[in-house]
Length: 162
Image (tube, rainbow, N blue to C red; front, side, top):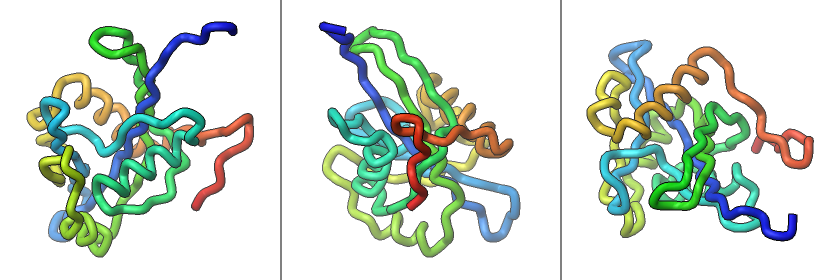
């Protein structure tokens, strides 16, 4: 193509924490960004020629202090052009973290564009997020629970774990 369309590629990560006193009760790690209404998954745009899973990892580490191996895509959300160019939002499986890793998040000082980091129980996500963000997380969470993620490929080769 001589003039490929401009398209955003946003990489987000679903990170979960189990309550120690209540097995099977989980919270998702959400970011309170100054740039949007409601809470959202940690993440951001990939730079040109940046591998998408590495962009997700970079944004996750910057926002939360967590460094996780990201390989599985839980959902892909197409967003038509409106106030931004059209885009694809990829949600990666950050998985279940340990309480030691959660302590890293608690002690982390996020960058200026983030007001705070929050662990939000699954039952409260709808109230904490905009409707489109909530639906994206709900779909990714369902895929995670059912093991329905897809591996990320780069030129047909699965990205290495690690």
